[in-house]
Image (cartoon, rainbow, N blue to C red; front, side, top):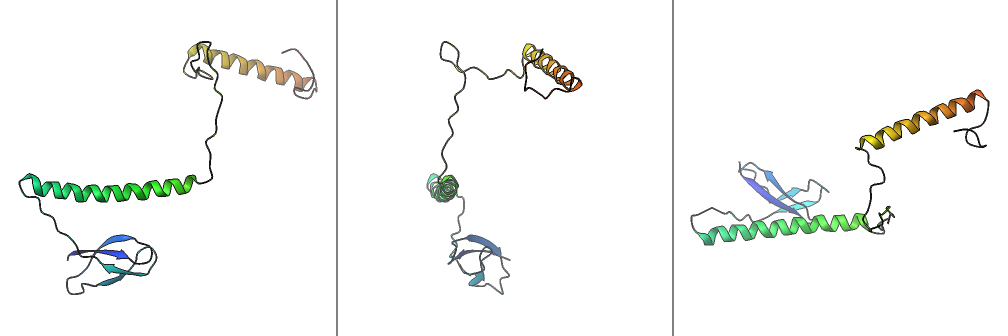
Length: 141
């Protein structure tokens, strides 16, 4: 059973279909939109020792890759329409280099975060005992 290539007249989808040689349909329903898709005239390529044949094959593959890449960039630009990049002011050191907001892997920073978290939890528990609302009036930290 040979594989035939089809191209949809409506949406432009190109697809391959395994068709019985006795059926060999010239028109098939598109898999995407259901409109008529016409059978393409297939080009068969064979790899033969020598540079000229391989060059033709490479050019054919390159054109197909360029076409697919263009479809990808078109879809990507369509998704990005009307959207802008957000700018974020990151902290910098005195020499102008960006510095991390928080060193997550640093052991000293991790111990500081744990200490701060436990002190904050104790403070909140103390305010609950005194029936004070959270962070609305000054109190011992």
